[in-house]
Length: 518
Ligand code: SAH
Image 1 (cartoon, protein in one colour):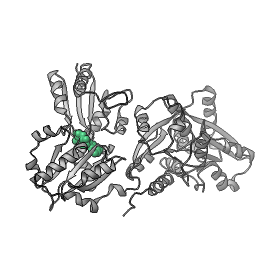
Image 2 (cartoon, rainbow, N blue to C red):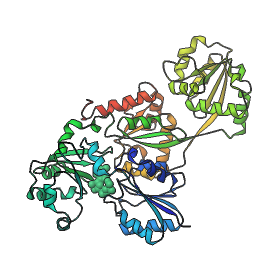
Image 3 (spheres, helix red, strand yellow):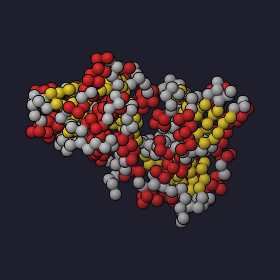
Image 4 (tube, rainbow, N blue to C red):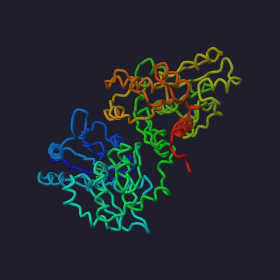
């Protein structure tokens, strides 16, 4: 049976500005066809194994012609696939969705059109410009600026437009800004009419230029202001001075790469978005249960005598997660832990315990293995039994130190961290376009694996590739791994926590020439 095609509006860029239905179409697709106006972050919702087809511009290739795209959609659907065609903004606003749908219909292929938030309205909104206003504009028009001047003249009744009471919104008009403003003035709009151009609105690259019909062309030239931009003509532009908001967000203007474990939903990425930054998540670590028979035996041994330990130290969230997995798999009762004092290295680990109704001892002051010894040193006595459930790549400092202090340490590897399997062309494209402004590392393995994956993706010298990208590390140890690998570490979070990392990101962004918070 033929497949089905969803013609989906991806919104203007901010990945949060897609509809719920649109996102569902990405999740269920066998193939997603997209171009540069759709945020690559949306593709991360695709199911694994689904195919991506990029039809936008590449250095060695022109944008695929519309006819070719139409045919591609037909061909994919004829193969029985569920196809999601992502289009910037709304598919019916200068999106040529009509042509795509028509060919699908001719070929007997089912389709749905899923509307999106058009850039025409949302991009001005992100610049603090409402397209209508009680006192200033009771209507708006959305106009293409794409055509050649004579075609524009044929399609646009300049005299009517120029004298309309509402806001004029031009898409695809940056190159024609001179012609557009001349025509509007010639047909009766005042030279002093305010104009704004908003480039890459709702994205990290958002930039706004304002002027009047009389001077905007010169300003665009002087600033070398490039497409894509939405042009807004009308008094509503003046509202920006009062209403501008996006620029005040603490992480405005920054696209931040978040390296993380595949299994962990990134709290860091969500926080970045909440603070007005754009995050791009890149899983570099996978955590798996040990498969080596000796390690499995070790786990069995140390879990069979849980009621004999005086202390259990958890040094990571994964440590907690896997501990409980093993506990369940071995059919053990949580009460077998009744004797042990339980310690978490930091707040995130403590939280992972608390959701399982285990309240750990007081947190160490430094969220590192060293902090544990500092905090509990005087209560740790020779002969006490300690269980240390940990990952295979974890540091050995703590077990060694405790053994040296005369404690009876059971050091059990409960999980392995391995490098992830997937390459990401979108990420490479963003690096090439200088689209990544900062990168965060939350453990030493994220550093090592990230650099290894870059090499695997064909980047010969990942360190050089990261020049100009600010590097953030969650703590001294991660920073040391990064520096040993040759990276220049810009900032280290004061405390080894997500909060602290967020604070250093905000402090860094506050240094630029951004307007400060109101
Ligand atoms: N269907 C789209 C418009 C496609 S035409 C929509 O509804 O938004 C492409 C034009 O849209 C660009 O030339 C530019 O004028 C505008 N555009 C799309 N996304 C934009 C963005 N994030 N910032 C500024 N302009 C954008």
